[in-house]
Amino acid sequence: MTLRVGFSDTVLVDPLMRDSLDGIGIYTRELRARLAEDAGIALMPVVMGPRTSRAAPPGVFTFQGRPSIETVRSIVLGAPFRGASKLAERIDVYLATDYRIPRLRGTPVCATIFDAIPLSHPEWANPQMRRAKNWILRHSIQWADRVLAISQAMVPEIVEHYGISQDRIAVTPLGVGDEWFIAESPVRIREVREHHGVAPGYFLSVGTLQPRKNIARVVEAYLRLPSAIRAEHQLVVVGKVGWSAASTVESLRRHVSSGVRWLERIPDDELRSLYQGATAFVFPSLYEGFGLPVVEAFASGTPVIASTGTSLPEIVGDAGCLVDALDVGAIGAALERVVDDPAWADALRVKGRERAKRYSWDACASLTAAVLREMA
Image (cartoon, rainbow, N blue to C red; front, top):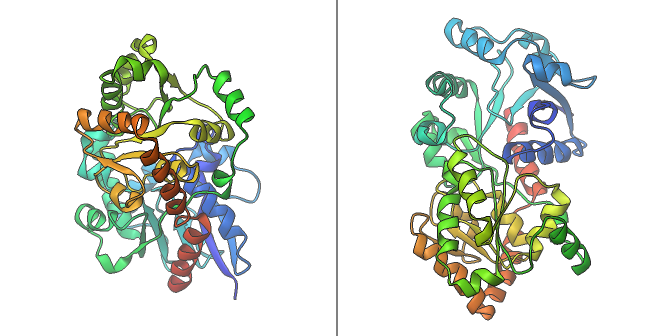
């Protein structure tokens, strides 16, 4: 029998997000594409919210009400979302990929939880209506019959901070597309680099500018490098402005003359070229539910420097260099070693490519489909 799956499409049609997808958006896009290719699954795309509902293409089921008001109504009154009964008639199970979790009576709901940052580290979350949002999030997750975690490291975090029992959690690691393994030509890499004003030999860091990404320490570590190294190796930071990023943006702009280059937005195909042209990828994040940019760097054949926190040791294994995210000296020493020890850097490139093969969107979709079939 064909499994009818309601699938959260909101981030893919949101006019504010669809042109610059973050990790949740990439996950939603890739998982949707692969589940749609499963002959045993019929997807019913679903969108929540007035802005996204207006932007939704034909054939998409929409919740017209404001998500926050509808969510509070469901929590306080124990009522399902308006329109939930109509949706329930058309699906066998619902998958929430983006924290927008509807309450559906009689229809099982599966929700992907990427991390516990809003509850475990509220100082790293947007302060706007933080307490109300966290209260709603903690309660709405309880409506999910099953929860998907994106790494083993997140399981105890979800249990502790969301109060979800471990037997309700399945782990479905994220993936990297086949296109990341395709070698770009030297000409293409040079063209992209020159288009963005980047000199050869650069260090690369990628991620939304926000406190937990630890970009300030990356810049500090870079500025402490010997001047001879900085003269030959720029620090290129790629990332759109997130919340509480004013000091980071100011630092990136202030140190342009010292070799720091900030690129706010670039297309995916150009980003792949930048990864492949980098001397090293540096990602000493303070907290990651998975760390997708690390796997993208692995697939690109770029040596990876990452932190020892949360999921990153699980994802990196022995294929990268792990450092204390708070230790500026350790970050700088790793950058310096990549330059001074080419044999070590080459070994990391080989190990990283092999490590990346463990993580595919096909595998993620297969594990997800298995959970959905168990629930229906």
